Image (tube, rainbow, N blue to C red):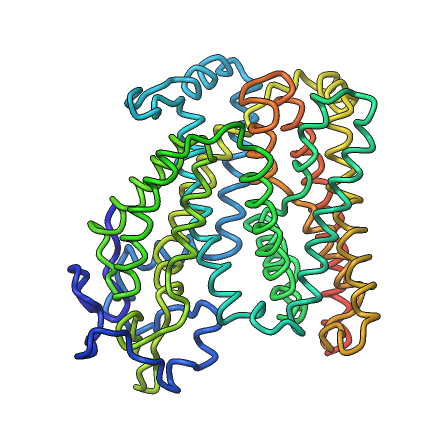
Length: 459
């Protein structure tokens, strides 16, 4: 996998991307380095050297909110169709084919490679988003961040509680999946907002993204703490070496794929061998990337007005890896994870009769919406905490239902809780799919209606 040419046209040959201070220490950011452009990813200018290339156009296409959601939806539908067709046995055989070096604990099935390997790319991008938000984004100011953070906590806690209450009488095995409905799928949720919320204020998307980023942070912590059976400390400690080398290189402004990708792969393999879920390595790598542009670590873009704008490396790597994540990693994971044999309408009804599936559906649809809206209402009762002036509570209600789309991470937690390919795992997939679909329909309808009302009022 090669890295595209940077937008500023600078070489990616292991040397720092920009002049290095003579004293060997990173230069302090200049005032231009602290511009609001660093607070959120900004696309490369249209006249950048590679902007008209075919690869650049494909990258921009895959980076769109709607594209990622549509690819994810297409992969899910295709998996369901294949799993419930005469080709179902072939689909299962392909998913279960194993390959890789046994000595390195990497003799994995295709499905496991998708969940443990490709999904690490998705979590790397999540790590970049977390770093950017905490250092230079909306989570930097506690007064601004407290509302979406509280909403995210409410949207995690209440669904987990509802699932637990529904499954109290089902035994301890069923309760292992308490965290399944806690996650929000960023790709699907943002795609719904992009499709139905065109007339809604931009603050709604910002609220959702901030909520989803915090939600992912909580989900990552849950996976690391509650779904790690045993830890082999020797490989885990060894993983610190490639992580440290990666950190040193990116802080020196190195962007060469042939240096950074091998370090990332070694770190991922060692974390996987330790027993900690390998996607945590992706998050760790993302968090190590500098989120403030300096003279040494950053990328310079030339704006349409001819002025140079310095962007942090979190922006640069997100620009490079988001298309890979949304266009390849997440759809492939969905294809090999969502293929459950439903058994027709009667089989679907039977699966939803299971307390695990029923608990997931109720938790995603009601738990997310009530938890997010309720927590937001409570926090705004505090002095100085207010909803964005351009938003109304109806917008928040619609967003809270959209946040009930818990696909990618929910499926991953289900596999960790019950075992990939197990009978209970199939029930989990039905619950996640149905709950996410219902949440998307309700939330999308509410936001579409509100968008039309705003459009009519503006006209």
